Length: 407
Image (cartoon, rainbow, N blue to C red; front, side, top):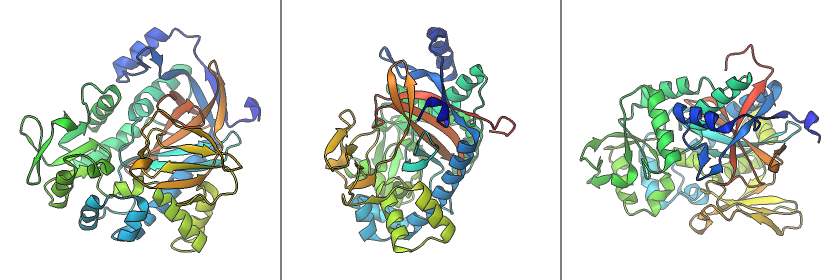
């Protein structure tokens, strides 16, 4: 496929002076455009056709509902918890905590899609627990697109976040290594700023728990906390069981809520595909969406063609392996932590991502779509190799053809 035929147009802006643009993004809150002399932000824009964006938005809404229904089916079924790789230490917490209303199991999530050059859309995974990329999408992308006169569909992200947190009302936002881990610290600071609430940011490593009561390093009691802390870590961290008990006992409300780990597990996509093949749970409209946008996904490698394997709780490309048509290993991630040593693996048919020609050569384009307070509302672009991991670049995603519609 030639670039002219692709649903993405690549606008190279590397000819512009980079330093003042990086400085301006730093002022806006995106402080990691350059990391240790490496250019994380690619000074370019990938512009998506308007009709592709509209389909992606509609697909996101349908898949959000489909996965929500799957979580409610799985809830309190311990055999399915095990299939999804949910650590047993969390089962009681999941069983006892009230299930949120429909569509709001997670109020802060991000789909990752493979959008091919011909516009074919396939879901790769959903990060419904601790998605990052919020600063890149909500702050950097609108500014970068605005400088180039390209429309951004991300301008409403902060409004949806404020609406979500007005309901959840966290008193604390936490991440590991707050103050030193630039990306996670900047992410929770941006979320707090956009919420408009008086929320304290803390380091997860400074928290301590006494009989279910969670306190920070200054002995301040925390009752409602947003945390960039993957819930599966409770199975391996020293304080994980105590944190689970704090939630079970009602002394701590954690955001995203406990059931977001069910949405987070890549095993849930295998559940959805299994229900589709068995003709269970879903109506005809939902089945059509599953057929169109979800890749065949199983708990065993049953494919005759090229496929991908990944841990149900793999993050940043960690644990991803790509196999060719003969079933031989073609490429694997060597940078991220391989969580398949701790959690089960799923196997998924391989999908094609759009490719863009850059100064660094041909790169694969991963398309993220944030879902905040139940609304698909923000694009996140990542460009890299066939596996999108820690070494990939952030690239702003704009949209052409919907300029008259509010973003």
